[in-house]
Image 1 (tube, rainbow, N blue to C red):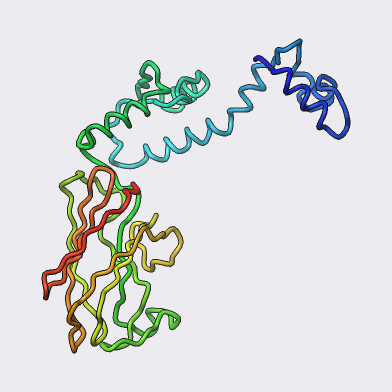
Image 2 (spheres, rainbow, N blue to C red):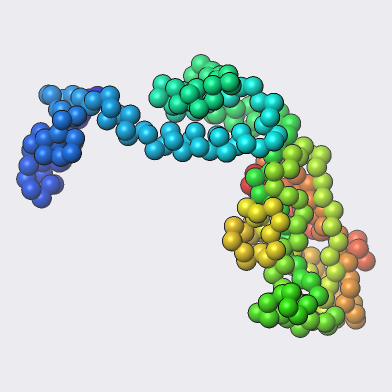
Length: 271
């Protein structure tokens, strides 16, 4: 590979031992496998393979993990895209790890992802189905039960003691959804008298059935508020939440059941 002269000058100026780069290479652990001749750096084949060994192993390991899913039972081919897919080292590793599966590597695999993004940008409905990477839910409360919930999550409300930070699941990870068609509806009620608004924080989780929004693998992606122009004297005012999964975003609507007022917002699709 070409080795810029300017890089040689920088090395010999900045290194504390004031060694020239050829002597530094000889003194290193690569002394017998790397050589600098004029402006060319010669690297042995075994050393190059070693540089990519870890990343290739991790890719193979991840694909093997995906293939253990029962939904992958009928998979007959692996489509390899992206610049790394053009590497013969990676191609050989995939073929060796999955001998019964056909590998498909399109021409100009490095630009396939970019071209796909452009097609999707012009026609979002080209994406007909998604498999959710995360579980989506909102933060809510439940009646507090001793010995079931920790005391640290106990909070007084007009309807009684509540357990806070509950992750109320809207839709579970690994579920196949159709953008523009998959819709979720839930109802939530106020807990206090004269409550003038209801905040609903939307969370994602890496777990299928998370318990609390502050648990491991959870992250908040946004908070919505719906205001009540005329607060009720008693708790229990209902709000309807509707979540529509779009092509690249989530559309969330809150509707005050009493007044009919609505609030609509969008969030980035995380999976």
